[in-house]
Image 1: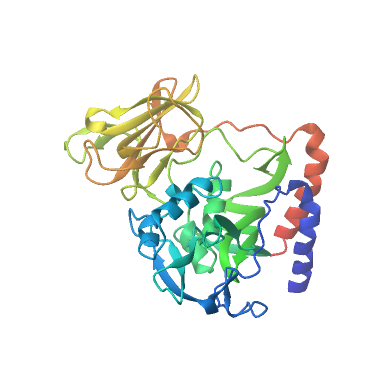
Image 2: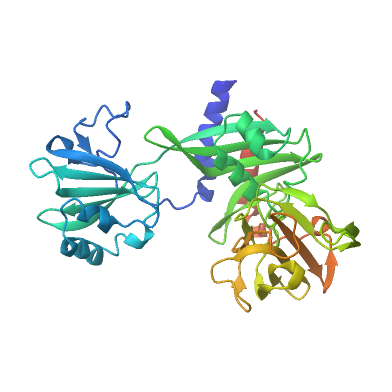
Length: 411
């Protein structure tokens, strides 16, 4: 059965070729891996990032908060003139203002002059590094590690949350994020119940033999509150989206919730005991308990109509989505970058961060939804769908649907 499933999974790449994203090319580097890695036997152990380490003393460190490469290089014999030349002439390769605190760097110092660094390697992320050269030629070069991928399948049942279900199956955390994004418009992840389940066929990415995260999703199913929702990837109008088995888009005009991986601490009510005022009054919103600084997302496209402090609401943002719908986000700690009255926003844009401003007993987001100017329960709003698969694309979509549903039925 496993062999049959593996053969089926190998076929999916060919069948779904019409849905494949254009792949970004990377610069292969013959010696990117740390010499301690056991799976790099073909690479000389004296090479690191293509540099012969036998002729240098290596100094490892991490970028400090508010730290600069110039501070590190000046301490190791590189002149300010050399640093300035490297930064100015190679800004198109790497802007040093994008350096992240905590990231690792490696200095290659000449052995006959320990204070002088010939190279500095800055590791920007798991796949991308930058080599600063201070020899006969002063230059900055970007190097990318090659990413490999494996097609995998996974299934799980909900006991407490999607995140916990993923951890119980030893799945990469990024898979939970991918599924929550795909089903954001059709599954209320704050309303999951014991016994809900999921299936997914996906691409797992690796760098140096270590898991990097989740790549493409080739198909998924979520059994939520007794309803089976299938997500099928398909390209239409040069853009890949996910559709249900009937060709309707899973993407709606609004997200189900304005933040991820939280919990509902208070619901929409016409009479709720206010935790601070100790009087009963309507609570026309849903409270999501979350740590201070949790990103708050706009649930749909629209325009910011207010971004200010408003008495008990604290720092808040109001968004008008169209002639019918509007939303409000209360008790923020700070606004998202560029958020102010009159600014257009897209679905998923960060419009602020969770806080406890105004009349609040602790960190949370008070999220409010308005229809034709009147407050409605956000958890009961039926969001309109976007365009379905067009009639001319349905034959191609049907081929993909049959393949994916067959594969999902094998486990």
